[in-house]
Length: 200
Image 1 (cartoon, rainbow, N blue to C red):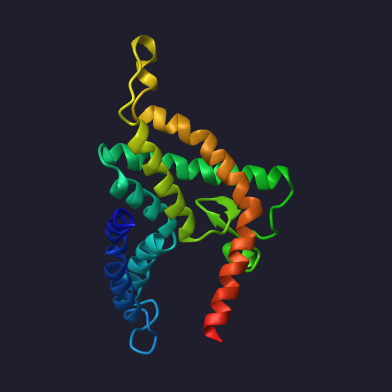
Image 2 (image 1 turned 45 degrees about the vertical axis):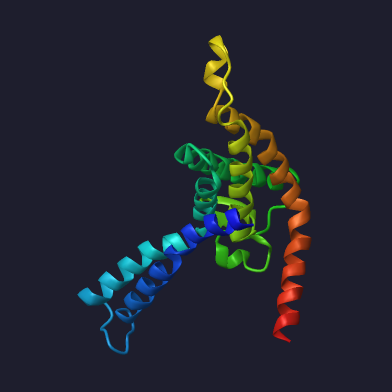
């Protein structure tokens, strides 16, 4: 848990900076003080769009940050495998939802609101929020620490080290993607119920 908290603090520390900048630029787009279409207004809109790209994809950045933070060595390779694993999960989940005819109706995230699904990097997937990045980041780091130093002799040498980590992650991500389609709706319902209970 100490290792996890240390790894989490890395990506988390960026959030106050990004949030503060978004708040500052939102002032420049307030029509009470700034004329719509003015130079200051356009700059504020432009900068906010850039910053919201980070806030809207926190799961991805948590995945990379945790994989790197928990990796004991070759941290850059751990992040690279984490990025590939994240996209494999998105493709796997979308494919399984399509094959089992479970895709929700909706062409935008606004239309998908309340359906339990969301668009991430163009893939319509189960909406796990930042939990997806946290789980995948920890899983990649776990496999990375155990197999990244494994080497093979001769012609099989190219399949060692971080490539072996990716090979191991492939079936794990495939199984995880299928499992979340069936399990996560119940988890999300439990989180929602707990939130309602705390609010009450």
